[in-house]
Image (cartoon, rainbow, N blue to C red; front, side):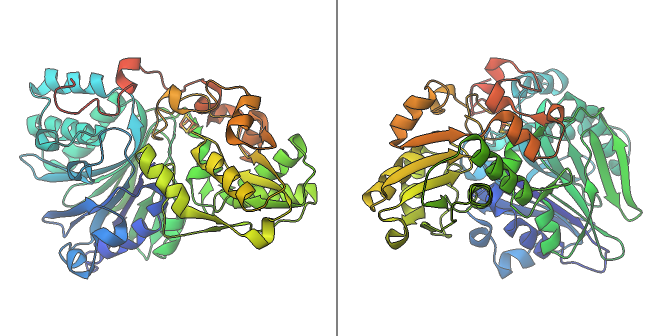
Length: 478
Ligand code: SF4
């Protein structure tokens, strides 16, 4: 997860930070733990970041302290490194030539190896923000880039580009990066293209780079194309310059289509909303049900519920009200917060569900906490039967590429049969969409998708030591 955004405007426009603020607002669903913006007027980079939502972190005063025509921004969801102020992004790194700021969506699977490289090359793993308590893989990337620059003898701009070409091939795992020096914006995407990253045009000569196209729409930019897997982009006064640091080997995250991305996102040419409706249709064909109404678990389950209702002919109804001011439950960082989040988030509409046989459509089951609480709530509210339908297959394996369901024993489907899961949830029946139908709904060749959390086939190899601990880079762990 995490959302990244960056903008490069003509020098006459000093509102890059404000534009980034709006862009981050539209990417809030990708991370709710911290938010930050770094901006430059061509001479100096200023950064402002804090724990909290975009609307909590920024106000007119803080945004006015970030003048400049280029900026990058970040909303965080932690996968490497805990929830603390030091881990907020963008991270900063200083060199003899100036400063760089960097923001990262994804998760590296070779942080231990990269720490060793840092130690071997520069004699110190605790450089830059790493020395000040930042324990993220993002700080590691920044330290590698700046460490290399400290040794460089050339001028700054060309050197950061060539340094990026040297460092990026060393990174393994998922990374959609935006970074900047005082005068230029850069963007890079791992060779698998695990996480999305798109480029847009704004005005005559401006550019925007963002995790999802909704962020382009919100600032009035028009979609140009994806940042290609393995591509490094640099934007300066002369426009957009593209180069390649690795050959593309596409393996995009299928979970972006199922749950992560906004429904108005387009990924690899496919509208996410349409993909979700099709997943619901396929689910109705694979697991039909005798019921009175189809209700979604709002809001990510809604398109699939619409598809299920259309395909089955069972009427669609809103049986749950959602408090929109409560964040996504599975991306809250602890189980306790997740449980509280569920109770705050959903409330059954008794007049709609009492006495009815319900098909309840959700996008996925990870730990099962939401669905278990939900079935109980619905039955307590008078539902006659509750049939759970899930528009993705059972999540049986951890994700090491940027989703925080990293441990086998956290996954309800990892060690339970379908029937035992149904019983644990208290549902009258349970059906999951097949891997084949899920992949088909994305309109992509299945070989270009990462399906690892469903089938255990990981597209990027890793050592268990590297991925087993979210707090790998906490003090003394390496
Ligand atoms: S393991 Fe699952 S969630 Fe992680 S990148 Fe692959 S498909 Fe996406």
